[in-house]
Length: 540
Image (cartoon, rainbow, N blue to C red):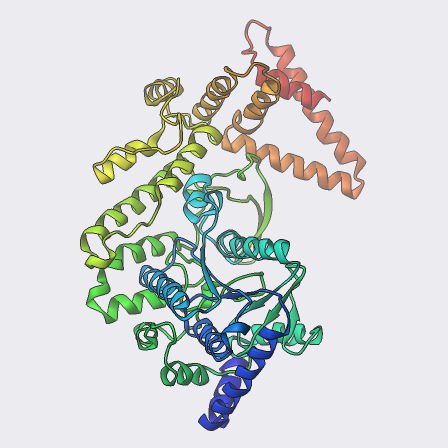
């Protein structure tokens, strides 16, 4: 049993309902005093799980008890929609926000709800399918900042710019985990006022955590015994928890110390930061009406494999081979760090996602038939990345979309369907390259680079761009990795001051090139821009 669980159990044994009632009264007074103390706006972050719902309800009830003339300060309620949330939870969130908005207007409450989303360039599928980012891991947790931290922090910064400062109200509790308890205790030392802690990542903002010492039992007793003031049923929330595992909810994430959705009850359905999505598995198992989510769970499990190196490029996303020391079963080897998903696998994930979306729209309950797993705007950006950044001018996205959905892809981006190069030219290139993937990649990059520069009045930078094409794509995987190893060995020799080895390696390269020059005439040797360039670099 973890320390956090022991603390939680201890709190559940010693805390009585009467003590909880007294704490609620004290908290109500505290919230009212803090609210009326100044004109600093509040930003209340909610995920609509049990903890954040409790805080929102406490704040609402406290402010509602004030005279109308004192309810002058706006409380911004923000929820971050990652666009890959569990669909059941996502529907609950949207329903809750709508109920909150209507009730606030009817009851004259200074509550202003906002549903935040990541910018298109930061969404999960644009990064995974478009750029080829591998499924998130603890060593490469690229999703949390893009999907959660950035949208919330951007909103908070705008409030700070408009008002000078803000108070961020969160439902974090020490009993969530031992790490969370330690982090909160650390921040307590620097508190500028009672209950208000500084926010290390957001200047001019303070954090208020009113239920930081509550246990799970406290939370559920409060939600079940105190009526929801905006008309939402807390019983429905309890039913959702009961239908899944008893993990913590996914809190509003504003910094990297906040527990990620990987350890939480309400998380992203694509999350690969845990071994299994126990909550979705339990929902499907416990409720026949939720079996329609099985295709989503299948995709998540397919993404979550221990070793996906066969699905990824041998180069990093910028095109260079980067080596690392790998210790496997006590044997140390130097291998290339796997890069982004290859073209084949990016197209594969797109197809799988569209298949799942098409199927769930047929099998889901009526209220979920409009489910969208990937938006039109995301697919437009993915198409742009494939065409312009990766030079894949075969333009496969519209074709895949039509094959899976039976509908024509309508790209909202102006001029997206106009191109000098297309699938026909790609097929010709494939025939010319005869299965040589690197040759195909190089030719595609060179042709598409020329296409991109053809309409520019000044073609400044084209030679540098063409040179980059050769640097990243003119060698076979074996030769590129071998070259990276030689560079690594040379760098190590230089750092160790091994002059003899440095001379041996550099002179050896020059000698090898001279032998080629002696053995072949200029007419016999195939002279290319790439070969001349590499010779020049080696000689220098």
